Amino acid sequence: MKKKKYQDIISNHFREHSSIYLFVVVLFLMGVIFGAIVVNSLSLTQKEDLFYYLSQFFGQVSDGKVAEPYDLLLQSFFHNSKFVGLMWILGVSVIGLPVILVLLFIKGMVVGFTVGFLVNQMKWNGFLLSFVSILPQNLIIIPIFIFGATLSVAFSIKMIRKQFMKKMGQPVLPLLGRYVLAYLGALVILMMAASVEAYISPALMKFVINAVQ
Image (cartoon, one colour):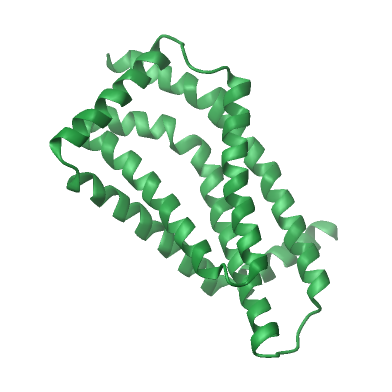
């Protein structure tokens, strides 16, 4: 019975917010595409400078001179949790709705730029490196960001309707309670993503870097 209840809750959530999810996913993908296009607008000097620093980093990974996994885990978790926390605050603030969408677009742009730059500079080897260094943790992080952005946008829209259109609906307190619980759950999953980034991605990167050298 409980399993059926949770399935119904999840199904109703996606059905209720399907249009927001579609908009958010398209916006994120536009950011990815834009980020990949930006790579081609860089000058040769800029590309060389970036690739130099990237090569230095890959050399450190190959030699095992990266930060301790525990430090990487904390850094990754706090970085991503701050991003999600900012979206949460913007959703509550009501006026932060456009900023939530801008943040998600920028996140997509960063992913697109990173992958695009690696492929542009290193071709097939760059694709392999982006696959092992970016994909594993982002398989968890990106859905959480999309989920978080959707919740924030939906909550913000509901608050706008209540405040400015004087529309009656669900009481604010239960909505806020579910909103908080959803973000606490997102933080737990972000800790899993941080563990992948700290313990799995560096090992995969080291293996690929040593293989392509």
